Amino acid sequence: MTTLDVSFCRRQFPALDTDWALLDNAGGSVTPRQVTARVTEHLTRRMVQLGASYPLSEESTHCVMQGREAVAALIGASRDEVVLGASTTQNLGLLSRSLRLSPGDEIVVTNLDHESNVGCWRRLEASGVVVREWCASGGAEDPAGVELRLSELEPLLNSKTRWVCFSHCSNLVGGVHDVAALTERIHAAGAKACVDGVAYAPHRLIDVKAWNVDAYAFSLYKTYGPHLGALYLRRDVQAELEPQNHFFIEDEDPAYRFMPGGVSHELAVGLPGILEYVDAVHAHHFPEAAEAPLAQRVAAVFELFSAHEAALCTRLLDFLHELPRVRVLGPPRGEDPRRAPTISFWRPGRPSSSVPLALDQRRIAIRWGHFYAHRLVSALGLHGIGGVVRASFVHYNTVEEVERLGSALSEVLHD
Ligand SMILES: Cc1ncc(COP(=O)(O)O)c(C=O)c1O
Image (tube, rainbow, N blue to C red; front, side, top):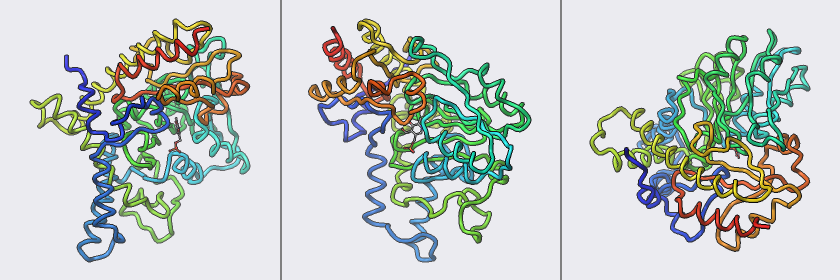
């Protein structure tokens, strides 16, 4: 079985040429040279306004469009279903303002999600929309059981439910939800599914068509790209929404109606670099399959990524399970397919800040806090100790880095 050549991957990321172990990737990933080269080239040579008739403008327009095409290819959608914006928070806010809802219509949000998929929906309450809360199971005494369950959603669904907004993977718990099954149930209730895929996208293949979601958001700066957010909006869903761009923006590029002010051109042109990087990984591992369709090449690479990440998770979880009184959120086994490599923990009574601050001395980058999953940290009763400690890996992290982290945690939390 082919395994990931992590050294090959790391060589593509100039920022990894450091003695720091960068283990805060759920905060943001670093970028491969394929992305930075494109951004630099655009700023250096091609930074003119789009849409004019002269050749440099035509080239610039083409390159920005290629950015959206690359995102579409990455998630199994088409370009006119991809909205690019400054961030997921901005994209979901825009979506919430685009819905044509009436007083009494209902929206379901969770108490587990990052606030970007909660707050914008809750603000609709001011116009008479009813917002219901889907509460995560488990709790501080059962941290492995913290997840969104269909059984808790069922009683919230009724004929007035319009949208259910939930996360594919929590940025704190690291547990992966079954989006296809949840979406099927939501559709059966006559509602639509808006999924926050930010904490999932860096780790596994995204297939919006297979899951049949209505809206799917993720952040490119956590998925090896520049600081942008992507929002998939299914074509028929777009048709029901109130466009957010100028009234004269026509339908030939439907998603552009949801991109007021456009997108940062120099960042969008970097996006094909993500695919180029993924393809370089593919060519390195599967030279005999170079002619396979792009979707298959991307899928094969994400298989390699997730197998390696599972091994990293297992290693850290082994360390954590040995530490006295430490509580760990999410699935306890690293190789569990429901487990993403985002691992949060705490020790009751101990300020969470004390751990990353001690690890800074050892050149290991992790962090503490509520990570904008403020309501979940409230539900767990952890604000008093400053939230959780979180370490988060992606495929370019090494077993050695995780061993360094594990040993440092064993020293810091041994008593
Ligand atoms: C799960 C999750 N959703 C949404 C967001 C918000 O993303 P952005 O910074 O692009 O607004 C984050 C950011 O950390 C996140 O982790």
